[in-house]
Length: 344
Image (cartoon, rainbow, N blue to C red; front, side, top):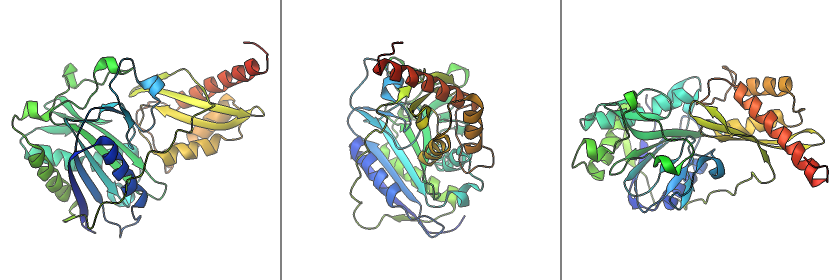
C-alpha cells in the first residue's frame, strides 16, 4: 500500500481527557480520500480513570463502586481502564476502503491491528489477534480494540494497551466482567511479560510496526496539535430503555421515543462495535415505522445487510436489535400511560 506518509504524534504522560479531545479533533478534521494522510497517535496516559466504549450507557455498563472520572472513548466496545499504566494507540485512516476493500467492522480491526501485532512481535512478544475486540500475547489479553467511522469513509482504530497495568477493568467495576484469554488466561500488562519494557521502546516499535504494516513512510505531524474538541452532550434524554439483552460481546439495549404511536427516535447502546454513522442510519431507517416485529426487523436487516455500507461486531443475530427496540417501545407506552394518569 502506497500513499501519503503516516503523520504521527507520540504523547508522553498526557491526561486522558486531553488525549481524547485531541483524537476527536483529528478525526473531525481528517481529510477524506486517497490523498489524505493517515494519522497516528501513541499516547502514554496519566492519572486515574476508566473509559466507557463509545456506545455504552454508564447506568448499564458500570457497577458500584468504580473509579472516577468516567470518560468515554471514541471507539466502541467495552469498558477499559484509561489512565496511568495504559497506552492508547489511535490510527485514523482517511479512506478505509483502500485499506480493507469491502467494509466490515471485523475487517477494519483485523487490518488496523496489524501495526500493534508487528510492534509486539518485534519486542519478542508472541502477539495474536483471534477476532472480536482483544489482542493477546501468549494467550493472555493485553489490549482492548475498537473503532469509529465517518460516513465518508474516514475511520478510527483504537487499541488500549496495558503497559504497566492491565487494560481491563476490575470485574467488580462493570456489569459484565472482561473476557478472559484462551483457557481462561488472565489479562496481562506488557511489563509483566517483558520486564523492563519502557514506553519509549514500545512507541518506537509501534511507529515501525505501522510503517511496515501499511507500507507507508513516517513523518512527524507538522505544526502544533489542533485544539481539542470536548465530548458532545448525551442526546439520550427522554428515551424509554429496554432491558439489557445479552450478546456475545456483553450487553445491548435500545432507547426509544414514540410520536403518535410510531417510532420517533431510536438509540442503540451497548458493548458492540460499530460506527456512529451506522447508528444514525439505523435511527433514520426506523423513524416513522410502527413498533411492530416485521417492520422493525426488515429495517434492521436492511441497515446491517451483508452488502450494506454499515457493519456491527459482537452480535450473532440482528434479531436482538429488533427485540430490544420492541421492548423499549412497550416501555415507552407505559411511561406515557403513567404520565397521563393511566397507571401501569
